[in-house]
Image (cartoon, rainbow, N blue to C red; front, side, top):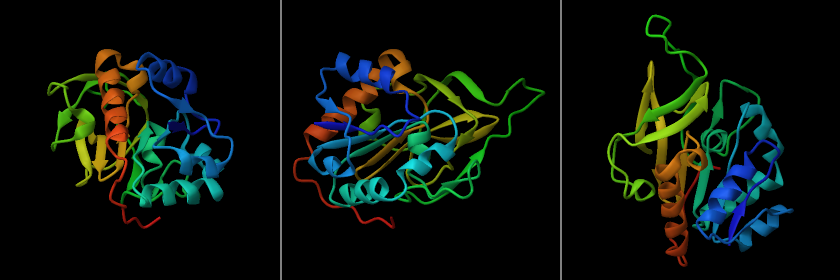
Amino acid sequence: MIALVDYGAGNLTSVRKALTTLGADYETPREPAECFEAKGLIVPGVGNFAATAVLEGPWRDTIAEAVRRGTPLLGICVGMQWLFEGSDEAPGVRGLGVLPGQIRRLDGNAEQRLKIPHVGWNALEFRKPARLLAGLDPGAQVYFTHSFAAPVTSACAAATTHANTFASAVEEGNVFGVQFHPEKSSDAGLQILRNFLGIVAGSRDPAPRKTGA
């Protein structure tokens, strides 16, 4: 079973529709402890990073412990940003901290008509082999809507450029994230979610992950 975490800022309807299309077994836990029963976790999100403040406390602690135990975790959009230490968008709100780095605002470029927020389809530039991106061609197009983004670090599986180059997909151990919306990215997005479901299915006895959370 996949635990789809609802903290009031996720595009749950679209994510649920995509998971249903793929035949996934998922539930939306009412209490943090239910996350321990899940084989995989998905944290979606849209809007301001400040919304993740709702996860502070038991939810954050439980999700961090599940990740340490080896449960695969996928963050989507703001949910991916939450995997990092924090965001300039909401300086007083902590991220989960399973990936190092700070979320920064994109610059945009008026001369090139690259506006912020970055909304629309853009390409993935692969940076390293990644299970989450299996079956996709280099340059695959996915759908974005955001103003802030993660740095390109060793966790970066794919980068995208919109004036700035940023991490558009991350993968490190059992932690995965995408800045774009796979549930709105047609076949490429469904393939990414399908890959995550496959990772979850193959992780019955995963190696625990050491994190700083």
